[in-house]
Image (tube, rainbow, N blue to C red; front, side, top):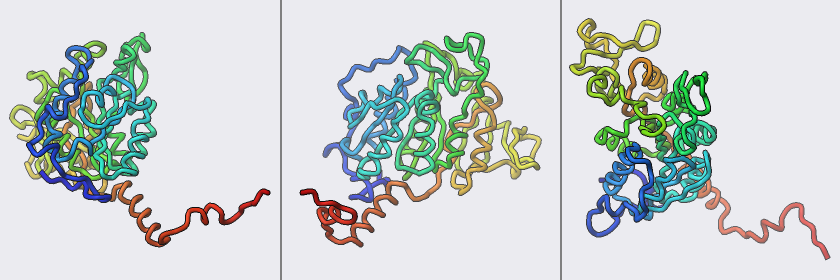
Length: 353
């Protein structure tokens, strides 16, 4: 598989791990995986370990950077380079690495507390700059590592150790937040849907620029069943809207529901048997403006309405790293060889005897 990521300072070295085809085992470290039994992180880890060999990259060219939280253990379990960094600061650290080392594929892992709370500003600036990062948000709508406090994505009324009579905070919608920051790639998937999860992660890997993926992930200890309505065979068909580029947006066991634009410029869910098929909204991830994708992200959420999953937006725009390195190369070409000692001694300097 060839993906437009690198080649010298312009992109990645697309060389296999070994002369033989790499496998999941090549990307599995010797560290004991230490998450609670039943945690959704296991499914995400297995999916990542399985699809990384398909990217055609050396393990030495892949780096996984995390902050603090249950999800932040991810770098220990991948047999690549990695760093367990500071709470909320993983996007900032990854920005420096990606900019200075364009030969690397840099993945950033964080939970809903790590990315949406203390790291919120770092996240939105990485997205608006379009830094060439793959940012994976593990969203279980709870603080798991610190034993069950409510998080920025917890629903209103959530009773936890830190909100004993119910949360009064309006939760973040991570996809809406990313689209508001005009991220060039935004997607949502579910931990238990291996096929969908892998396809979304692969699409993110192929994107040049900031790729943000929200992964709805179960915490069976402190927030078990948070996404059951999206997983239960009896409810998932009417609760989940699967977005596919170039196709009319329909859902339900037999496609009996659809999405269309209203006369007031919004979106509405309709019965497909009662409307003309040509009035249904056709999903297009390549819209330059993120307005339609944003409206899709507001269709509903896990607790109210329907939940769209899939790629919301995927547009080509210059990556921050490429532009910075182009400026450096232009400056070097204009300056010639240069004399560092002369530069340091130029301007306002003093000689002390």
